[in-house]
Length: 211
Image 1 (cartoon, rainbow, N blue to C red):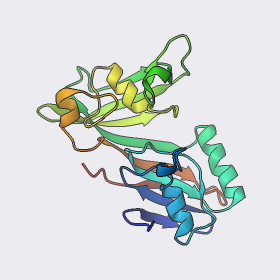
Image 2: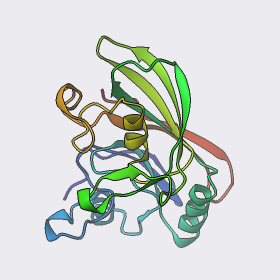
Image 3: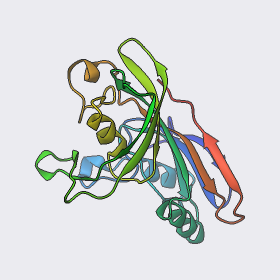
Image 4: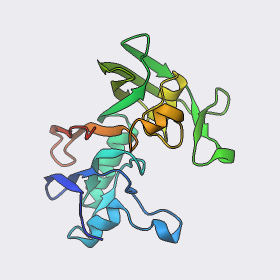
Protein backbone atom coordinates (compact mmCIF):
# COMPACT_ATOMS: atom_id res chain seq x y z
CA UNK A 1 0.00 0.00 0.00
CA UNK A 2 1.23 3.54 -0.71
CA UNK A 3 2.06 6.15 1.93
CA UNK A 4 -1.17 7.99 1.08
CA UNK A 5 -2.36 10.27 3.89
CA UNK A 6 0.67 9.54 6.11
CA UNK A 7 2.48 12.83 6.70
CA UNK A 8 6.18 12.73 7.52
CA UNK A 9 6.87 15.77 9.71
CA UNK A 10 10.51 15.02 10.52
CA UNK A 11 13.14 12.74 9.04
CA UNK A 12 16.74 12.14 10.03
CA UNK A 13 18.98 9.04 10.07
CA UNK A 14 17.78 7.95 13.52
CA UNK A 15 13.99 8.46 13.53
CA UNK A 16 10.87 9.71 11.76
CA UNK A 17 7.93 11.69 13.10
CA UNK A 18 4.79 10.69 11.21
CA UNK A 19 1.18 11.84 11.31
CA UNK A 20 -1.07 8.77 11.31
CA UNK A 21 -4.53 9.13 9.77
CA UNK A 22 -7.63 7.73 11.42
CA UNK A 23 -8.74 4.20 10.46
CA UNK A 24 -5.22 2.85 10.06
CA UNK A 25 -3.58 0.33 12.37
CA UNK A 26 -0.16 1.17 13.81
CA UNK A 27 1.04 -2.46 13.47
CA UNK A 28 -0.42 -5.53 11.72
CA UNK A 29 -3.39 -7.21 13.35
CA UNK A 30 -3.71 -10.96 13.81
CA UNK A 31 -6.41 -11.45 11.19
CA UNK A 32 -5.31 -11.78 7.57
CA UNK A 33 -7.45 -8.79 6.57
CA UNK A 34 -5.71 -6.59 9.17
CA UNK A 35 -2.22 -6.66 7.67
CA UNK A 36 -2.35 -3.16 6.20
CA UNK A 37 -0.88 -0.75 8.76
CA UNK A 38 1.34 2.28 9.19
CA UNK A 39 4.60 0.45 9.89
CA UNK A 40 4.16 -1.88 6.90
CA UNK A 41 3.43 1.03 4.58
CA UNK A 42 6.60 2.76 5.75
CA UNK A 43 8.70 -0.40 5.34
CA UNK A 44 7.37 -0.97 1.83
CA UNK A 45 7.80 2.63 0.70
CA UNK A 46 11.37 3.69 1.29
CA UNK A 47 11.89 2.94 4.98
CA UNK A 48 12.58 -0.83 5.26
CA UNK A 49 14.41 -0.24 8.54
CA UNK A 50 11.39 1.40 10.25
CA UNK A 51 10.65 0.11 13.76
CA UNK A 52 7.55 0.89 15.82
CA UNK A 53 8.21 2.55 19.20
CA UNK A 54 4.66 3.19 20.45
CA UNK A 55 1.15 2.89 19.04
CA UNK A 56 -2.09 4.73 18.49
CA UNK A 57 -5.50 3.06 18.31
CA UNK A 58 -6.88 2.31 14.84
CA UNK A 59 -9.32 5.24 15.04
CA UNK A 60 -6.95 7.70 16.73
CA UNK A 61 -4.99 10.03 14.46
CA UNK A 62 -1.82 11.97 15.15
CA UNK A 63 1.86 11.85 15.94
CA UNK A 64 4.06 8.77 16.20
CA UNK A 65 7.84 8.45 16.43
CA UNK A 66 9.39 5.69 14.33
CA UNK A 67 12.94 4.46 15.00
CA UNK A 68 15.32 3.78 12.10
CA UNK A 69 18.01 1.70 13.79
CA UNK A 70 18.28 -0.66 16.81
CA UNK A 71 20.06 1.81 19.10
CA UNK A 72 17.52 4.56 18.44
CA UNK A 73 14.68 2.11 18.95
CA UNK A 74 16.14 1.08 22.30
CA UNK A 75 16.63 4.66 23.49
CA UNK A 76 13.24 5.95 22.32
CA UNK A 77 11.49 2.93 23.86
CA UNK A 78 13.28 3.67 27.12
CA UNK A 79 12.03 7.26 27.08
CA UNK A 80 8.44 6.05 26.78
CA UNK A 81 8.93 3.37 29.44
CA UNK A 82 10.47 5.88 31.87
CA UNK A 83 7.78 8.49 31.09
CA UNK A 84 10.25 11.05 29.81
CA UNK A 85 8.17 11.87 26.74
CA UNK A 86 5.54 14.60 26.43
CA UNK A 87 2.21 13.52 24.94
CA UNK A 88 -0.80 15.79 24.48
CA UNK A 89 -4.05 14.82 22.82
CA UNK A 90 -6.98 16.92 21.62
CA UNK A 91 -10.47 15.44 21.90
CA UNK A 92 -14.12 16.41 21.67
CA UNK A 93 -16.21 15.09 24.56
CA UNK A 94 -19.95 15.04 24.96
CA UNK A 95 -21.56 17.38 27.46
CA UNK A 96 -20.04 19.97 29.78
CA UNK A 97 -17.78 19.00 32.68
CA UNK A 98 -18.59 20.95 35.83
CA UNK A 99 -14.93 21.90 36.28
CA UNK A 100 -12.51 23.38 33.77
CA UNK A 101 -9.73 20.90 34.51
CA UNK A 102 -9.01 17.82 36.56
CA UNK A 103 -7.01 14.69 37.23
CA UNK A 104 -8.32 11.14 36.71
CA UNK A 105 -6.65 8.34 38.66
CA UNK A 106 -8.54 5.13 37.85
CA UNK A 107 -6.97 1.68 37.22
CA UNK A 108 -7.86 -0.04 33.95
CA UNK A 109 -7.94 -3.55 32.58
CA UNK A 110 -9.01 -5.41 29.46
CA UNK A 111 -12.67 -6.50 29.44
CA UNK A 112 -12.61 -9.92 27.65
CA UNK A 113 -16.39 -10.48 27.50
CA UNK A 114 -16.70 -7.17 25.65
CA UNK A 115 -13.45 -7.14 23.62
CA UNK A 116 -11.77 -4.94 22.58
CA UNK A 117 -13.24 -2.72 25.32
CA UNK A 118 -11.40 -1.84 28.53
CA UNK A 119 -12.89 -1.00 31.91
CA UNK A 120 -12.16 0.53 35.31
CA UNK A 121 -11.27 -2.13 37.88
CA UNK A 122 -10.01 -1.08 41.31
CA UNK A 123 -8.90 -4.60 42.22
CA UNK A 124 -7.35 -6.04 39.05
CA UNK A 125 -6.71 -2.95 36.95
CA UNK A 126 -3.32 -1.38 36.21
CA UNK A 127 -2.63 2.15 37.44
CA UNK A 128 -3.69 4.83 34.96
CA UNK A 129 -3.62 8.62 35.27
CA UNK A 130 -4.81 11.39 32.97
CA UNK A 131 -4.88 15.18 33.31
CA UNK A 132 -7.62 16.96 31.36
CA UNK A 133 -8.42 20.61 30.61
CA UNK A 134 -11.34 22.19 28.78
CA UNK A 135 -10.12 24.56 26.07
CA UNK A 136 -13.44 25.41 24.42
CA UNK A 137 -17.08 24.95 25.39
CA UNK A 138 -19.58 24.52 22.56
CA UNK A 139 -23.33 23.98 22.68
CA UNK A 140 -23.49 20.20 23.17
CA UNK A 141 -19.87 19.24 23.65
CA UNK A 142 -16.49 20.65 24.49
CA UNK A 143 -12.91 20.53 23.28
CA UNK A 144 -10.46 19.15 25.80
CA UNK A 145 -6.71 18.78 26.08
CA UNK A 146 -5.70 15.40 27.50
CA UNK A 147 -2.32 14.59 29.00
CA UNK A 148 -1.80 10.92 29.86
CA UNK A 149 0.76 10.13 32.54
CA UNK A 150 0.50 6.40 31.88
CA UNK A 151 -0.08 4.73 28.52
CA UNK A 152 -2.80 2.13 28.99
CA UNK A 153 -4.90 0.90 26.07
CA UNK A 154 -8.01 3.05 25.56
CA UNK A 155 -6.99 5.08 28.62
CA UNK A 156 -8.22 8.48 27.46
CA UNK A 157 -11.47 7.08 26.11
CA UNK A 158 -12.35 5.14 29.26
CA UNK A 159 -11.21 7.89 31.63
CA UNK A 160 -13.40 10.53 29.97
CA UNK A 161 -16.28 8.05 29.87
CA UNK A 162 -15.83 7.59 33.63
CA UNK A 163 -16.56 11.30 34.07
CA UNK A 164 -19.77 10.91 32.08
CA UNK A 165 -18.33 12.63 29.02
CA UNK A 166 -17.56 10.08 26.27
CA UNK A 167 -15.56 11.14 23.24
CA UNK A 168 -17.60 12.00 20.17
CA UNK A 169 -17.81 9.32 17.50
CA UNK A 170 -16.40 6.61 19.78
CA UNK A 171 -17.94 3.40 18.47
CA UNK A 172 -16.78 1.41 21.50
CA UNK A 173 -17.79 3.68 24.36
CA UNK A 174 -20.22 6.36 23.12
CA UNK A 175 -23.93 5.95 22.47
CA UNK A 176 -26.79 7.93 20.96
CA UNK A 177 -26.10 11.59 20.27
CA UNK A 178 -22.49 11.39 21.44
CA UNK A 179 -21.79 8.62 18.93
CA UNK A 180 -23.59 10.38 16.08
CA UNK A 181 -22.07 13.82 16.74
CA UNK A 182 -18.84 13.10 14.82
CA UNK A 183 -18.16 10.79 11.84
CA UNK A 184 -14.92 9.56 13.43
CA UNK A 185 -13.42 9.13 16.88
CA UNK A 186 -12.63 12.68 17.97
CA UNK A 187 -9.20 11.93 19.41
CA UNK A 188 -5.91 13.22 17.97
CA UNK A 189 -2.33 12.97 19.24
CA UNK A 190 -1.48 16.63 18.77
CA UNK A 191 1.88 17.08 20.51
CA UNK A 192 4.85 14.77 21.03
CA UNK A 193 8.02 15.72 22.88
CA UNK A 194 11.10 13.47 22.93
CA UNK A 195 14.85 13.70 23.30
CA UNK A 196 16.86 13.04 20.16
CA UNK A 197 18.10 9.45 20.58
CA UNK A 198 21.64 10.39 19.53
CA UNK A 199 22.23 13.95 20.77
CA UNK A 200 19.77 14.15 23.69
CA UNK A 201 18.38 17.45 22.39
CA UNK A 202 14.78 18.11 23.45
CA UNK A 203 12.44 18.18 20.42
CA UNK A 204 8.71 18.93 20.33
CA UNK A 205 6.42 18.28 17.37
CA UNK A 206 2.85 19.49 16.80
CA UNK A 207 -0.03 18.40 14.58
CA UNK A 208 -3.30 20.40 14.55
CA UNK A 209 -6.42 18.34 15.28
CA UNK A 210 -8.44 17.70 12.07
CA UNK A 211 -11.77 18.31 13.88
